[in-house]
Image (cartoon, rainbow, N blue to C red; front, side):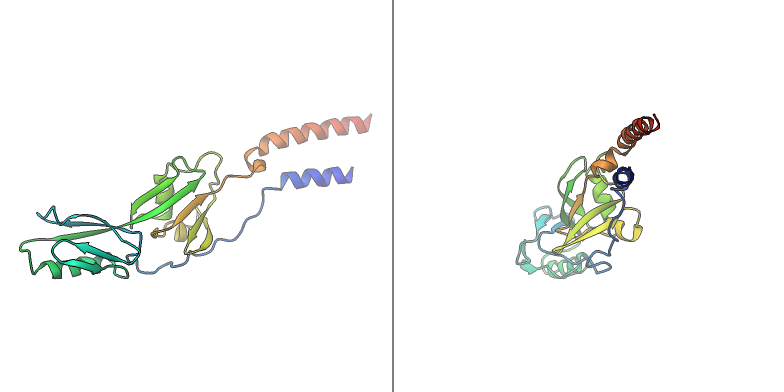
Length: 204
């Protein structure tokens, strides 16, 4: 009888526990252009010079008129200033706008898992929302962030981490809740019924 109650207690508490969330690597680091990023360059009245440029592994992009330029390691603001300087030799009355876009992967228990290209101002929480949000079978309390070869558990309620900006190459994974967690009320009802039958048989 004692062993039975111990087993019931273990089933009811199986879904408890969890790791402590950590700060993702690179938290607070200035958002620099990295391989795999997409640069949206808009030059006023110069449509042929404008467009989206994906940053190759060597970090070098060929821009119209000015030629090759290594962009990795620069921020979007630094690149804009550099382009303004270089195009001054060829253009007049122009403006340059540079938007940094990050390519990330969102997988797991979300409505639309896929590869997304998002503005660098988007946060981890934003990325999950853009993928349609967490499915009913997904964990609402935490997700997994794979960044630079490390896996970090992110507490959704922790605004410091969940609201931190995404980085190119981030892989966001929403795990499914355990079977016990998803069917807790059904299991409790079944166990209660079994215990009721056992108690009835014992008192007879």
